[in-house]
Length: 231
Image (cartoon, rainbow, N blue to C red; front, side, top):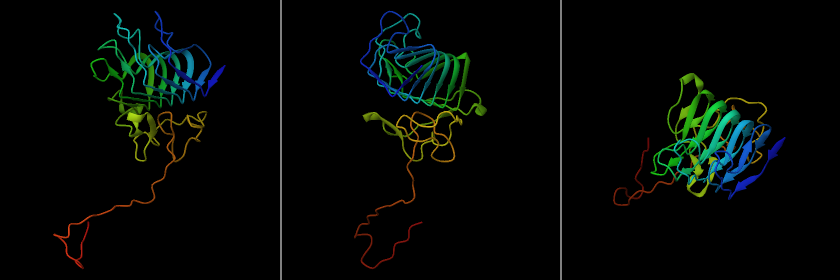
């Protein structure tokens, strides 16, 4: 089966680690938004999660095992690709993983950024030895260089106001692994727009052809008719 174009919000998990908003064991969830949920909004154990935005979720439960409950995605097996997981907070624990926990499966072309524990420290991801992790943009470096994972600011348009599109010049642009079956992004924009696929749930389609700069000079320094050389 397939879930496409849905919004999951306002859900609260119970006493298990996988009942926040969506528990998927097969099929695909695509082009969907998960926000304002508490306790593991996505638990994936065998399905495919793609082109999804996971932001502004919390985890209010403090657990003896820090990874039982998450504010973001608990990925046990299957595939998670071209998702943006950002701005989630594990409010119940100073050690809990707030962004993406991947014990196994494939993790490719995702942005995992600015997910924090209760004390504000970054707790973006935890990857198990059984996970294949390639071409992701993360808070901190992970894996060998040839895996293509980047540690850099993704340069969102306005993360404070929940706009996780990419600005021109983002390191996520054209640096994703090519996946021919991922033909559009969360907005329905065609992939790729340039020479390569973009990391995350949004494909940047802006162009930069001109740079306009306004220069202001003090009259005390430069009089009428004087030449100014820049460069």
